[in-house]
Each structure stands twice: as C-alpha cells, then as structure tokens.
Picture 1 (cartoon, rainbow, N blue to C red):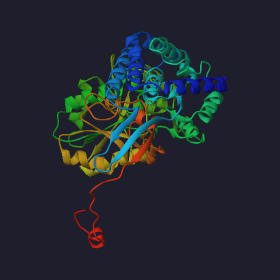
Picture 2 (cartoon, helix red, strand yellow):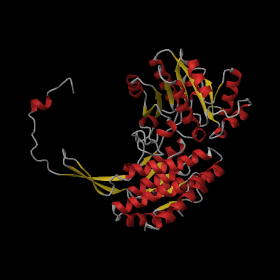
Picture 3 (cartoon, one colour):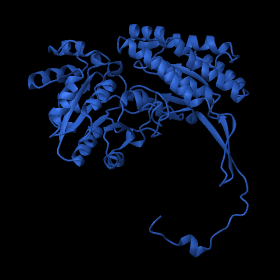
Picture 4 (cartoon, rainbow, N blue to C red):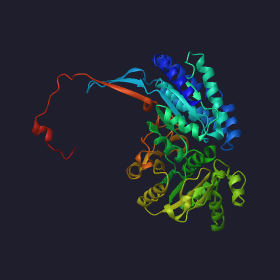
Length: 454
C-alpha cells in the first residue's frame, strides 16, 4: 500500500511542480481555510477520539493556527527566483524536495497535518501524513476536507494523502520511502525519523521554565501563565511548567495565582499524592495527559475547589532532586524560590538539563538586561517574554517566531534546527553566483589586520 501511495505522491508532485506562485498560494490558502471553516466539527472529533484537551481551546487552536500560518505564508516567495542579494550578487532559485513524510501526534491531530501540508505544498512538494493511531479518524477527516477543497482548484490527485490505518511499521516504511521526514511526537518516533536514512526534522521534549522577575504586575503575569498552562489542558509542548519567583515576593505571587483560579498545595501529604498520580516510576503517567484539574485531583485522591484552573506544587529541590521538575502534560506546575536573579536562571537551567533542553523558556519582566541574560544563559531555541508561552512560542501575531506546530530544539534537543519549522525547510535552493563588478580586493596587510572591536 505504501509503495502505491508513494508512486501516486511522486506523480502528483511532478505535475504540481509546474504550478505558478499564485496557483500554489491559492491551494495553500485553502488548506488552512478548510480547517478554519470546520474548526468546531474537527475539534469535537478530536476530543471524542483522543479523550484529551478542551473543546473550546481546540476550536481556538484550529482557527488561530490556520489564520496565523496563512498570514505568514501568503506573501513569501517559494517558486522560481525568491531572492537576489545586491551585495553578493547571489540569486536564489527555489525548488521542491519531493515527497514529504509527516508523522503527526495525538495531541495535535488537526493542526499538525494542516500545518505540515501548508508548508509542503508552499514548496510545491507532495505530502503523506502518518497520523497517530489514536487520532487516525479526526486526522483522516481533516485530510478528506482538504482534498475536497483543493481538488476544486485543480490540485493533482494524491498531492495530500494520509495513511488511513496507521501503524508503527507503516510509519517506519513511510520514513524510509519519503524524500524528507517531518516528525512531531514522542522522542522515540523522532529518533526513528533521524535514523531513517532520509533528511529529517524532529522536535525535542518541552519543559518550559518560567521566571517571574521583581517589580512587575504579578496579577497580570499570573493570568498569562495560567492561560498558557491550562490551554488545551496542558498538552502543548511549549506550555509553562514552573513558576520561579523571588523569595520575598513568593507569597504575593502565589496569592496572584490563587486569585486567578490556582490551587496552591501547601501540604506535603497532598504534594506526594499528586506526584504519585502524575508520575509512574520515572515517567509521566500517560493517563494524566490532557486531563482536567478535577480528573487529576480525583486520581490523586485530593479534594480541590470547584473550577480550579491549575494546580501548583512547590518542588522539593531542583533538577534530579524532584521528579516534579520534569515535563507534565497537564494543568499542573511546580514552584521555586530564588534569592538572586542569577539563582533563578540557574534553577531554570538545571531543570532544563534533565528535560526540555533546547526547547523554550519564558520570562515575565520589565528589565531588558535580565531578559537578555536569560536568553544568553539558557540553552533554549526561543524565549517568550511577557506572554503565554503555550500559545505564542509556536508563532503569534504579536511576536516574530515563525508560526508552526513543530518547534526545533537544536543540538541541545538532538534536533537539526533551533527554530520553528516552516516552509523554507522544505525547499531546495539553487544559488547562482553572478560575477561581482567593481570589487576592491584588500591588500594582505589589510586583510590580516586585527581589530579588537570585531
């Protein structure tokens, strides 16, 4: 079956390679627009099939990602000459890679296939999606709707396909047969993608550390952090995981969280119950992923107030000293106290070293020097400032990150890119080196002269 899909995909891609930029962009637009138009139905399907997340948040995600990705792509060149450097006289010509094999997760079964398809088609590639088996129906419906819409625009049959009965064997076969692999999911799958023998883009684990600086509006910061941590019940890899606050401000920060719907655990007994419910051995309990605070409290055997938005637990140490310092894909966060800002950065760094290295961090601060220090010291590919990390690290109308559902983590996270994955990663570029006229070649003494300001 996979060989037939690949053959069909190659035929579609060869035909599509002759499409103009306006023709390509019309099809890319419709891939996003069909998810936007069917956001509610697809969100409901995803909730019913995966049993995780929040319906209203999935609707917002379907609409929001479709809009922000198309807004970012619509004016970008991806066909023919895309750039001419006036200084180097290099002319760049964009060409497709071929067949994209995209492995998509159960946590984002609608927007990840949509996003990958938009990026692939923007580069005049074809794409075959290998969905997570626990999300195969809603992902297949997404691709079905996409194909119905782009067929009307003359898109070749087979340009966007999906494996309707996915399995590990079929996914591995796809990764070996495709020309490039995009893997969004668990670390095992990402490692398999990098071992497929084909160029691959994968993601690393998230564990977003959040530093709360001094002399800021704690209430505003708490609202943003909670909005991020609770979005889709915490299944977003860029979701906030910790609150690192100054010791002198700690009580005020916790009050701000409590005032905004947080349950701050003060009992060691309750904390132990939550720890045992969230983690099984040294791994996160899969049954808590994407579940509500009410469900998690029930699993822990702890009573919490009705309408609790997030649960806060003060960690018993940093890094390997407490398993709570690892990623928790549910609306639960850990808290830490610091005495100096350098200590706050060190807490974040230590936690990232056990999980989440290379992914993202966040800071709420009005001090640009402190913000830059975090960016300089932490081994993260993106630092979110004064915004909900979960909903903005993957690109937003209000920051400059490329809108995406696949966030590279660089060599820190064993990834090939340290930026948000986008269409440009699915282009081959031919560079034409035109002769540079009137270039003054410096003498040897000038070339080797050393300046301390360099």
